[in-house]
Length: 261
Image (tube, rainbow, N blue to C red; front, side):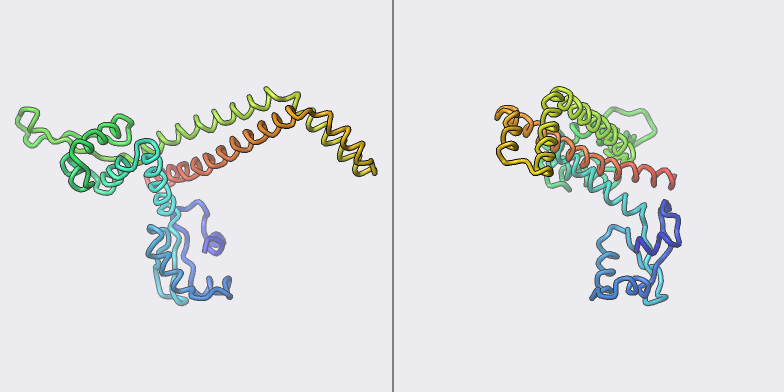
């Protein structure tokens, strides 16, 4: 659907031009139960796939803005859970979906004790995941108990905050990776030279004894240290790639929000 849509739409548009069932079938001739798969996408993709007509067996439209909105909401829920736990994530998700909620409503609908709900909403507010909106029950000046406090979520502000965390984390990973390499430069260069000599020997018909002699230029302790450094570098790089994916999703959410604004 993306491939077909990109031939007739601006790929950066929030809403792409429709494709028909017949066009999809032409590209996926061997795929059985295509109508059922499209039905599942329509019902379970969070609005990313929508049926918009019946021409050509059915017209379907991709909503990229909705796709990134759904992905981002799920991602932010996971971030809240990792930072503050499952109950906090449940409260955050509940308030986000309901718009604005009073404290007592939060405890009741989240099925959490009032004490825990109060503590977790405080933590969520303190960490800027929640905002508080004051509503006076009367225009006449009144005591504090006449003010209702409503919790709500500004998702774009939360996403921008998460993006800042991601930027800092990526920077720290890059610095750590560069530092690890710099601290072991001589040893890593030695490993490269030894491997190069061994490869040349094998290509030129050197004996196994000659190869062993060259490999023994690296002590056992040096070999272990190189393996440790390589493992650390790989782990840092994998973490960086994971954060890059997170960054991309959050940035696309902000992009489409700006388009709608």
